[in-house]
Image 1 (cartoon, helix red, strand yellow):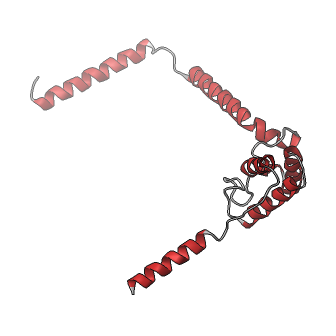
Image 2 (cartoon, helix red, strand yellow):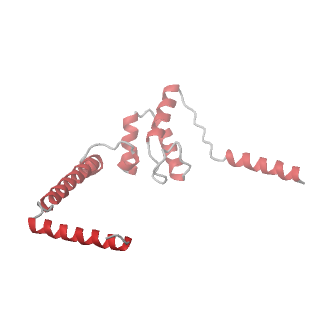
Image 3 (cartoon, helix red, strand yellow):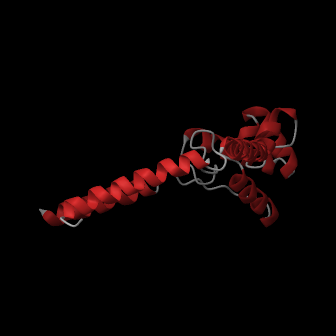
Length: 161
């Protein structure tokens, strides 16, 4: 009984592992390399942290199929990237183009760093300005009196005079 279960589970496991394999035929190795390069540099919109080559989402499968069709039709990498960006948006490119809609994406981190630096500088300046000056003579006398009082109290607790 356990042998049947083991064989059945191995068959099912191997069947599931072959379920999503896509095989594309290319006319020449250059087309195949173009396809491989493109599917590695286009982002899956469902998974967002995976390229369409790594993702098993249906949208990624559709994008791979469309990329294959465009490569087979003789389109260049830049034409295919432009088509995909027009169809799915600039977000699906790992390196989106520099244009007004993507300025925040490109310059946002640098602006945040500069803004953070300016805030820290301003806070440090404020703390320096608000720092107390030298202690007055009256305050020094009061501190000495408190210190001698504290020393006297400690000596009395110890039993020493």
